[in-house]
Image (cartoon, rainbow, N blue to C red; front, side, top):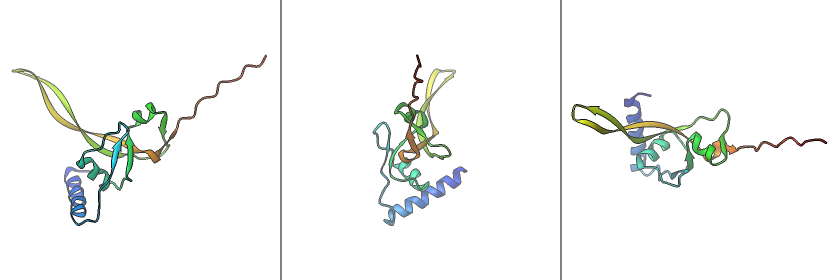
Length: 119
């Protein structure tokens, strides 16, 4: 999706919010932090359900796995990039994308049952 298409999509969602068609998305990360308004709008534009979202490894750390064939939702997050120039080391802010999955797209990891020894 191009930048212009993303902007158009977010603008359409914004108009729906202003018109009262969308009351708001409650999207929370597995870290129990509410996503930014931008990411909540971004998730709403992707028609994500309200609920708890997490990255692949975040779900794994909680004993869950993403179901086979599931497609995630994109969010944007800030990060610092260290660059060295003539004046020395400088941190420049930038943004990157991540894929998150809804709780309903995950399932518990099956515990491997140890083989019983026969005597």
